[in-house]
Image (cartoon, rainbow, N blue to C red):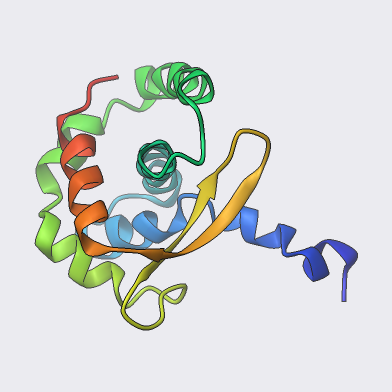
Length: 134
């Protein structure tokens, strides 16, 4: 087994993929843009759960603006997402088990696997995502 795998660093490659899987399967979004919007969602979630600070959050979102200026699908993605449906479908993502939801989140200096995210938190962050402008 690779050294990085013993530390779980390969999980960082899953950043953005939980929501991306939903966007690809449910709404036909291509993989790259789906992961991009998944990363935005997980950045919002990271900030909501206080695993990144405001400075890091703002820096990440500034970078997201540069990408969104090229992709320009945010409004369309926001309209397509039905929160109840998305949460229901995310429950069946391969990373989730049991009562809670699991996401790869950003931290101020790396990433973490957060396994105990409640539905109420997801609803709040989905609402933020649907209202945000880049």
